[in-house]
Image 1: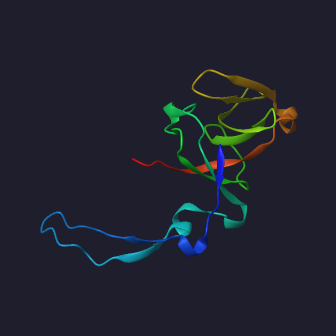
Image 2: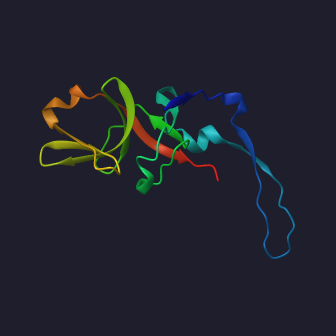
Length: 132
C-alpha cells in the first residue's frame, strides 16, 4: 500500500454534462474534488490498495482510497488498521463484544472491544476511486 499526496491547487476538474437528446455540450463548471471527496481535510489521507483482498467490497489493487482519521468506525465500514506493523485494509464488524477485521480471504482477527488499542485503526475509508 502506498500513500498519495493531495495538492489542493490540482484538485479542480471540469464537470461536463452532455445532453443526450441533441448532443450539444452544456457549459462546464469547475468542480473542487476536495469538496466532493473530503469531509474533514485536516484528518484525511490517501492510500492505494496493494491487493485485491476486498474485491467483493469493490476495492481492487491500485484503487485510490480516501481515508478519514476522524471518523469512528462502525460495523460495515472498511478501515485501515495497523497489523504487525503494516497498514492493511479490512472490513470492520462489531459482534458480541468483539471486533472482527476481515478480508475476502477469510483472514480474520478477533479482538475484544476492551482490547481495541492492540490494533490501531488509522481511519475509515470514505471513498474509493477506481480507474477503468
